[in-house]
Image 1 (cartoon, helix red, strand yellow):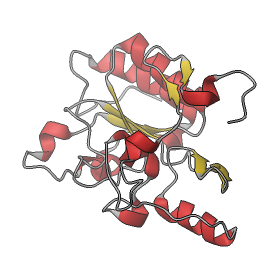
Image 2 (cartoon, rainbow, N blue to C red):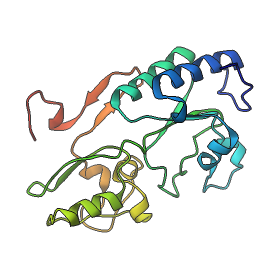
Image 3 (cartoon, rainbow, N blue to C red):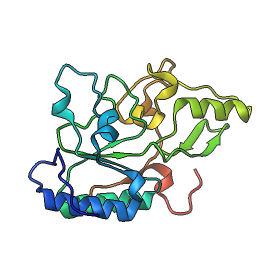
Image 4 (cartoon, one colour):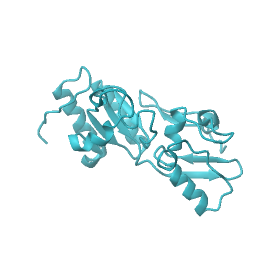
Length: 207
């Protein structure tokens, strides 16, 4: 693919350098998961804050489906000094939606990572990927006749528990302080390493 002219670039990154990174993203994720055209990026530039859309316009968006792909994206970003902004469902309205913090960042969109891995009715825990929505989790509880209820945030079904938790969102029950109630995460750090918190980080532990 010939080098194209990108309208928006990350801060201090030249056209050629950015194109190299885009080609590496395409090799890692497939063309359909690397979005650079204006029409493709339009949904990622809707903000709900009193500032100009242009201040929060992304240079590209990439969608990942595995932890290894997320690690690969982070590695490429580090190689080419490209700032990355991560979203899960991008529907936590009031916290910026999917728009990046500042102009030119690429968006790492995790909405395709949307598996419900395990729900423990006895312990009242759910292990989910970042793209899972409250609607998905509610439907899962209903379909499996699990005696649990969810503490939704204001955007309700279209938002997700991971994004709302990381944004310090709240629900409407005594368990509504979502960040306080999370009991473990699998995180990809800025250097690409995977770090697990809580009992899930203990080898051989099933809690």
